[in-house]
Length: 209
Ligand code: PRT
Ligand code: MG
Image 1 (spheres, rainbow, N blue to C red):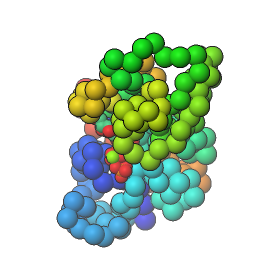
Image 2 (image 1 turned 60 degrees about the vertical axis):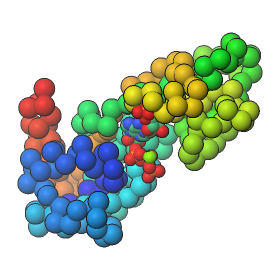
Image 3 (image 1 turned 120 degrees about the vertical axis):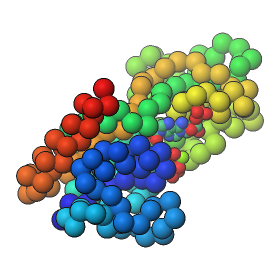
Image 4 (image 1 turned 135 degrees about the vertical axis):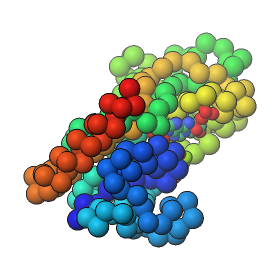
């Protein structure tokens, strides 16, 4: 049995063509089902539906053999203990700094609100900027508006969320897409099945151009 960890929402939606091309269609629709383990049209493959940020943990501990997770989540988790064989090119966005559109140039020492504490620490340290990082779990956009932080580090896709809150993107930290990750022991023990799946995903990727 192969277990694949995937989050509901945009990653699941965009991963579906890859799964379906490999003959993997969930029998229940995760949008309507409350089941956390989904059987699929392949008897040897099941999906576990978890929070996006939990995917690396499940795969690291072997609770799932494979997973699909955003590069943002993988970097923040620290995914040295996982194989990351394939960039699926899905759920694309940019990790950026953002500040109030009328904010004066940022002071020498700044406060940054983000859920990406490690990535932000590394980014500002590399630039030689003294930054106090304030960990938030959501609604980062609010922080500069209420004086909690000078800027934020968050994902940007269309920019509409920033705009709606009088913020503007400032610096690009990195381009983000979702990756296939594999548990290291599973790669050995279930090598044939995993390599087959990888090949099928690669084929789908190639047809997407
Ligand atoms: O929602 P939940 O708390 O369960 O977890 P999650 O937010 O981590 O999951 P989900 O499904 O929202 O995101 C999963 C992954 O999708 C992320 O880890 C990213 O790799 C990727 N992704 C791609 C995005 C976006 N695009 C995105 N736009 N994740 C989040 N957003 C959010 C962003 O944080 C901001 O609030 O959408 C808003 C910005 O969108 P625009 O279009 O207004 O710029
Ligand atoms: Mg979300």
